[in-house]
Image (cartoon, rainbow, N blue to C red; front, top):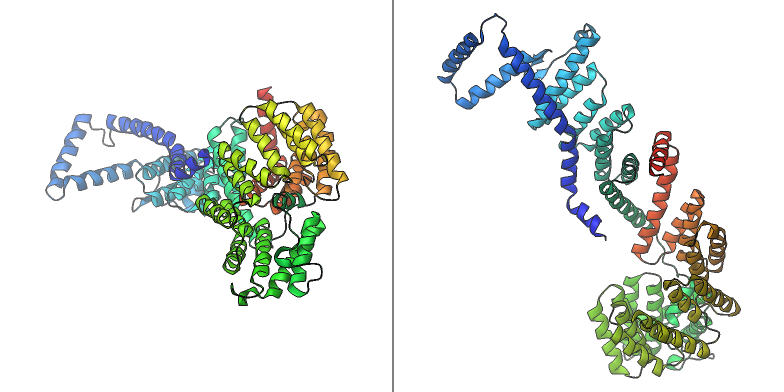
Length: 606
C-alpha cells in the first residue's frame, strides 16, 4: 500500500467536507454582499416615508414591548425571521417558499430571474445554518423558475450533507449536462459514486477531472489511484469466489522443485510398487520430467496416492505412515504452488503428525515465510536441522529467506553451505553471484557466473540471470546476447526450466530503447505466450506493448488473463488495475467533449 493511498484513506471524511465547502464558500460571500446591499437600501427609506431616526424609535418601542414577554434570544430570532420574511420577493408559508404553478405562469422572464436569484441566496443562508432540508426547498423552487447548473450543484451539496448520495448523483448529473466541465460537481459526484461502491463511474469522473486539470492535479490523481485500487480489489475478490486452484506456469514449478534434491524412491517405493505406492512413485517420476505435461500428471497422481493411503485413518505407528507423509508433503507443495495456502498447511501438518523428515519442515517453513511468519519459518528450519544437519535443501531455502529480508551475509553463508552439500544445485551458484553484485563487486559476480557456466554448460538459468545483471548495469546489448543464449539453451532442452523468461526479459529491455523496437518486442512476447501458456508475466508484458500500439481490446484480454494466472493477490490486483484503466481509456475515446479536452491539454504541453 502506498503512503499516498493510506493518506487519502485516513482523510476521506475531510476530503468529502472540503468538496462540499468548496461549492458553498463563494456563494456565501456573494450572499453577504447582497444582504448588506439590501439592508443599506431598506434603512435609507421605509414604506411610510419616515426618516431613519423615526424608524429607529419605532424599532426601539417594539423591542421594549417584546422584552416584557420574551427572552433576548427569542426576540432576536423573531426579528431575524420577520426581517427575512418582509424582504422576500416571493410568497412564504411557515418560513418556506410557497410558489404555485399559477404564480410562476404569471411572472415575467425578468421576475423569474430575480425570484430564482433570491431563492438561491436564501437557500445559501439555510445551508450555512445547516438547515439542509429547508435549503433544498429553496433550491428546488429556484429550479422551477430557472434551470441553472449552480442551483443543481448547491442542492447536491445539501444531499451530500444528508448522506443522500443517490440524489447527489442525480443533481450533479443534471448540472454536468448543462456544464460538462463543472469540476465541483464532477468531484462531488465521484465522491458519492465511491461511497456507493460504484467505482467504475467514480473512476470516470476522476479521470475527467485529471483531464480538466491538464494532467497536473496530483491530489485528483491520488484519488483516482485509490478508487482504481478499490475497484480492482473488488473485481479480484469477485473472481476468486469461483476460482478453481490450478498449477502455475511450468517455469515457476521447475524453479521451485529445482531447488530441492531430486528424489525417486523415498521410503523404498519403486517401479514394481503397487496401489498407493505406485501412485506416489509415478507422481515423482512425472514431477522429475520437468515439463508442463509431467506436472499436470504428477498433480493427479499425488492426489490419488493421498486418497489411496487413506491418510485420515493413519497414525504415526501405521506401516504406511512414512510413505503417506511423503505423499502429503508433495500434495502440500503443489497446493502451495496453486496458491491454496490453507489446504497446503493442512496437508503439511498431517505429514508432520505421521512421520516428519527434514524436507517436511522445509516445506512448512516456505508456507510460513509466504505469509510473512518469519519466526515460525526459522523455527521450522531449526527443526529440519535437528533431524539432519547435513540436509542441503534447508540451507538453500534458509539462504533465500535471508536474501529476501536483505540479510546478505547470512544468505551468503547458507547458500555456500547448500552448494557444498549439493554441488548440483545451480540456483545456489546463481544466488551467490547475485549477492556479490548486490555488494558492489561486479567483477567477482561476473567471474562466478563464468565458473557456473563451465560447470552447467547447458543451463539456461545462468545466462538469463547474468543477462539481468548486465541489463541492470545499462549494458542492454550484452544483456540481450545472454538472453538469446538462454533462450537457445531452453529450446534445446527436453525439460522446462526458465521457460519464456529470457524472451520476456529481452522484450522488456529492448522496448525501453525506443518505439522502433516495439515490433520486435511484440514478436518475442507472442512467442513467450505460446511457449508458456500459463506465464502471467508474458501476458502482462505483451498487453503493455499492445496498449502502446493502440490495440486496446487485445490489451484488455491479456491483462485479464494475466490477473487470472497470477499467483498472489497483489499481482492479481495489479493486472486487474491495468485492465480496468485500459477499459476507462477506451470509454474516454467515445466521449467527444473529453477527447477535445485531452487534445487541448496535449497541445498546451507542446
